[in-house]
View 1 (spheres, rainbow, N blue to C red):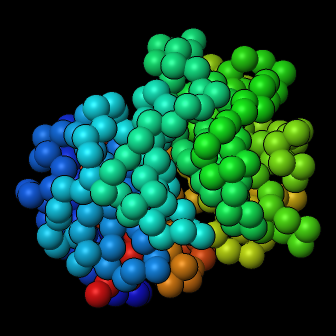
View 2: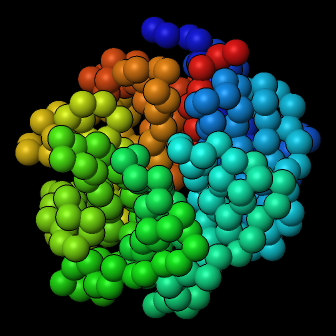
Amino acid sequence: MADDYVIGIGTVGAGLWIGYGAGQRWRHVQHGPPTEGNCRALAVEARRPGEIWASADRVGLFRSNDNGGRWDRVGTDIDRDIWSICLDPHDDQRIYVGTSPGIFRSEDGGQSFEPLDTSISADCPIGVSRTTNVAVDPTDPRVVWASVEVDGLHRSNDGGDTWASLGQLGPAEFYNDVHGLATSRTADGCELLVTTPFGLGRSRDQGASFQWREFDKFEGSKFDFAYSRCVRAPWDDVIVVCVGDYVPGRVGALEISRDAGTTWTREPLPVTPNSTMYWLATHPELPGTMVATSLFGQVFVSDDSAESWRKLDREFSEIRAIALMPAA
């Protein structure tokens, strides 16, 4: 078992936690995001080892340069709930922050942020919209994607200066309740992967059309499909989707494809998750390692490309963000 990585856990109501030794030793961060606040977003800067970013609702961003040991407040106040952080892989000075509602952008490494004029609606059928993910296209630095609950998918073709909505993504309104967003390189460009309550949508034409896959329902669920959350495509031909019976749910699982989405298996975990599985984390310098969490605090780790899993003893309150990074 590998023991040379660090896990970050962001929670609702209990701030930020850092786990060392592959999650065997934990520390509650005291001088960073408020210890009794909400940390809904984490991001790791792979180009600068040891650098991790964390959010605090209605405060802004914090940064650590030593794998979560010491934290400094960075940038201007962002007086909104923060749901996502994107560190631009093409420009290490550009950062996007997804809020409720909207998006902020920094072009000076986080020293200052400006709210962007986007196509995202402030209101949605469940109240105030939430920008669940922001992602920069891995093949084109000008293209930026944003997923929103319940306002679909939005695209910028100029680095965030202007935006357009992709409109209705599926046959019903809540196909625009986009929870997960990932990009995957293909032989001819980039594939978009999104998740909604109905399952996984895949697009190879820049979001003009999606092919949808529903996952099998859970026994006893009132729905005929599995509720879906985070999606990642971390290794060649591997796609992982977090699912459950609903939100917060009473049971969860991981759906895994090892042939680029042709076939799927609901992989066994060492214990039945206590709620819907919500979050996934990998790191390019930790090939084969993945961390997965349930909404209600359970942490599962695989070091063999999701072939087998172990549950960590430590459990948390409601988990809203996770991160994985090599040890310093």
